[in-house]
Length: 456
Image 1 (cartoon, rainbow, N blue to C red):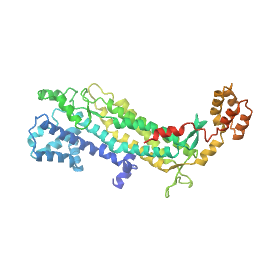
Image 2 (cartoon, rainbow, N blue to C red; image 1 turned 120 degrees about the vertical axis):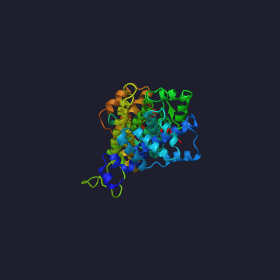
Image 3 (tube, one colour; image 1 turned 90 degrees about the horizontal axis):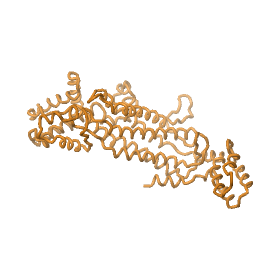
Image 4 (cartoon, helix red, strand yellow; image 1 turned 90 degrees about the vertical axis):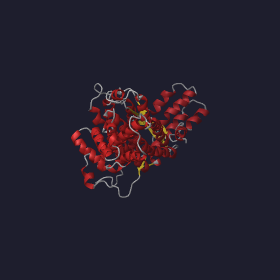
């Protein structure tokens, strides 16, 4: 993008963040959408020849020429289609007219009437967008998510035994380990990653209201349901034969909902990391040349996590709108979904930008173990849970109440705790078990839980 285009872009995805989101242009730009629909139209024409045998056989040279219209599709070709669209005010018809002119200039002028034969525009559009969603997931989004998962795995392993004060309701609770808290998010995200990866996108090729009316009328001898099923499966997509003019977008929405949940988990994560940095449990490494404030030179801000949180929120707002809008269509079709579907690149762009920022932020953080240990040492009351449970197991009555009197609303020291132990009328075995408790060692099975999550 030229500098003036960068500076005058209407939105940040094509301006400030153009470099980070550029890979998605190959799937969701206007150029990419036109190119993919040209591909579908050409593939369908060849299927009418090869599979339906309605169109005369093509020579090897003609097949090569047809395929070159896809592989060689250029910005000039896209411009020619947009010029036609200024007259037609219909993008798919402009694509058809463009292809008619190209075929007429080859040895294929006699087959131009078979272009877009029996189709409705949404047959082409939906196939093109299903391919864009599937391919961008595989090439862009999942690899970006995998960068986060790899960093979480490394952090969970590195800090699996590093004790840290946990908080419930924002108050000191019981200890955990930093690695276990990373492992928690890793486990949640791994489940969503599997759902995203396994999702198979649906498409349709069922005509103007879903009944293949035109095809059945023009060539009733063809098993159109089987042919259209095979055509869609050749793209490794799932055919849905029960539609209106539109595909019921429920299938796509399950993908978007999985992305929205993934993003919500990452918002939760970004906010937690932000808090750990604020509490000085984590530190962001300073990078030479970067500035944290225009006036406070000491600052190293958690901007990657803040940027990610904001972009995840914008993406999820779009995904939420898709869930409200796309299942709804007046009767057999209205056009209100079309403009909404053109924003898929924006939702995925904000998602990708967030993933990039999270991965970068995770690369820069490290644990401040002395600060975490000092916080634990200042809160010996957090082992009250363990102490009262040991006493209850030993048959001591009112154990909870005893610990409540000692600790509730108070900060107690190691000395306070050990002095209290000596007042107990329990045998020495129980006292020894109590003396073994400390905020830095009362971490339960956190290490084992981390190992279950990060195992190869």
